[in-house]
Image (tube, rainbow, N blue to C red; front, side):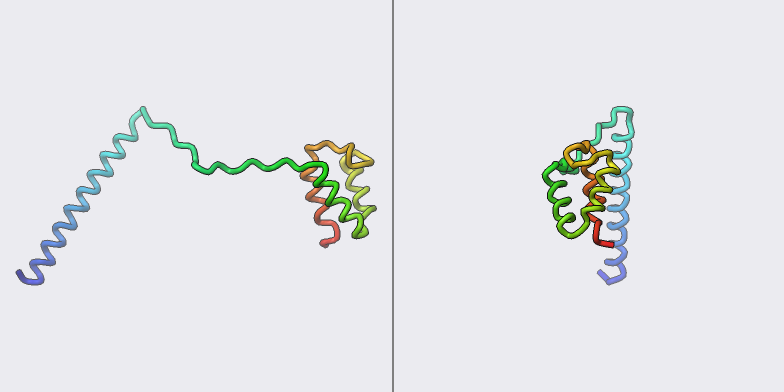
Length: 107
């Protein structure tokens, strides 16, 4: 068999494979496009929930910033959140307070 006829045969087989794949994909599409669509699977690794920030964690950061000379700024932050001392601040405000405190002295 000559090289051209062998190449022609390979191209013909490749075309048949392509047609078979197209047929399979159309069958799968019609199976899953019916009104009985399966529910999507849950992701295997859901995003972990954020860990709640504790009073102790906030207190540690504020104490460190106070030692670094930012005591007046810390007082201003506490007053911004409606408190004179950390224990009076609502726990739901801890993430925002902590974020603001962590940038003290960085700018």
